[in-house]
Amino acid sequence: MSQIPTLAQAQAILETYNKEPFHLYHGQVVSGVLRHFAAQYDPDRADYWAVVGLLHDVDFELYPEEHCVKGVELLRVHDVDESVIRAAMSHGWGLSPTPYEPTHIMEKILFAADELTGLIGAVARMRPSKSTLDLELSSVKKKYKNEKFAAGCSRAVIERGAAQLSWTLDELIERTILAMRSLEARC
Image (cartoon, rainbow, N blue to C red; front, side, top):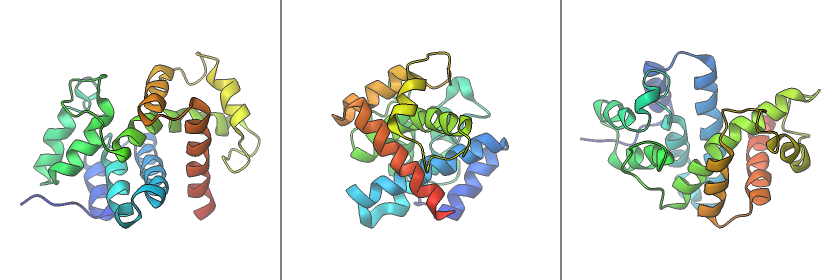
């Protein structure tokens, strides 16, 4: 019988397939960002959103060429509920052969924020504070325009994500900065 894993179970699943500290950290960041947005859009399911965020890249470290496809198989091995699999793997829509299109607000936010969290994190690490707590939209926009900065963070995906949400790019960046600040403020 499939299940919606607890956060601890999701972390254990993630760690089964990911050992690199960056991948584990990225899972935590995206999980926290989704939890932050859940408070606004689906407060009764904040843990569910956080689990989806934690598991979204479960396959990336071992199977980058099969990303969002191999993840389906890996999560099914752990009897993860199909709704979690669908939501987590939808962030690869149009980028991989995943069959899952982001349709729910959570899936759209995951699609938009996944790449953006990496870019915002890179901007924050360049600052004297190494933090998002004092990071402003203008600083991110300045680095965003430089395609060589955080080149692995696809601007096209970020922009497509903003469009799927019917948010401006500035709105997406600002709201994601605030979400990432909320993670730091709790630490």
